[in-house]
Image (cartoon, rainbow over all chains, first blue to last red; front, side, top):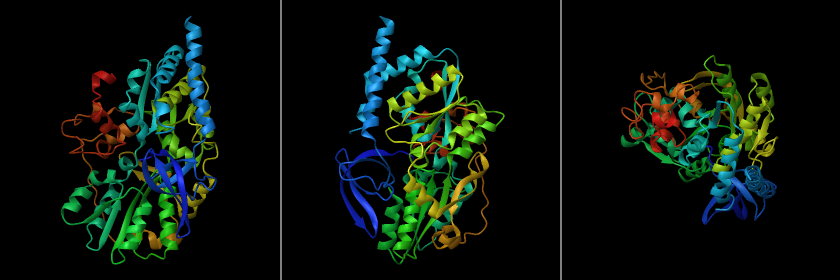
Length: 81
Length: 366
């Protein structure tokens, strides 16, 4: 239930005073409430749960984590050689 | 899908798995709190990649599983009323009450709709002014802002035919209940990443310090889970009990302040009864009195509820990490997803359902 997936904002609009967005989840489009992510704009990746965006995904942090996992492999290769 | 597939990369998974094998020297028991993580662990075979010293036990982070029997019975009673359109997340429909489930209410003519978002239920209320639309607002802190937003939206639209039946629970009191139990086995926690995306993790250092357990904020993809386990085991091996974050692309220490504001505007902290576990003080969220007009428990008088729980089901012990699903005499025989005795066998987040679906047997997990 606490599953939430990243999607890209492709459109923002107002619905009865609520900030909403159309989100692209890899080709599947859904409407999402953007009230809690005022800093998110078109092109931002947001983490969406039950039609509500919980946070803006940090692309920098994502890339840094992946780089750290890569380096882990290099360190291990160094240790075993 | 971007920012999902990268975190399932097999070569990188191997790097992290190798590192866990390299550093572990002693047996450790870790608990993942969130049921979504339990399913990801089973689905991806994470438990089978770990060294035998590391045991994962599964936490209570399954909202459908911990929603009290009394509230499930109330939902059944409200949903059976003639003018009600009862909306729920799909997981809830097969959860056994004392006498049947929401599917059985639907079979008897009750109007029940599965919705993806509580905001969809608000739309249904707009489209059906002649009906009372009730949304079963279950969930942890992850779902609370969406549920709160639905109430705010219904209020802004002056809807008089929308209400929610609230079964909101919160994670930190449940962690403390588990850690302070004399039967506790948990030595390290993987904190639920999406709960933390809303609430942050500033509340956790106090718990980590008091119970001397490391707590690692953890995501849901294979690399996220393995990184969470690696960081937690590193701490355990070093004898430290800090709070660290293995899900930094989504979670920061403070959490989402606007989401917390929306949550606090509509909900207040209350005591909450957890199914199979019992009353945990200050572990729930209830509607503030000024939103009584949107409170289904105020709007519908369903009379006194007499609850009756299965005598065989050990869901409560499973939810606290005391027993594994395969230790239940009814697992896979009397109790299956099609014919569940307890909610943990129903939900896409329940530990029993995960074991059943991904064919974990006693021998695999021994």
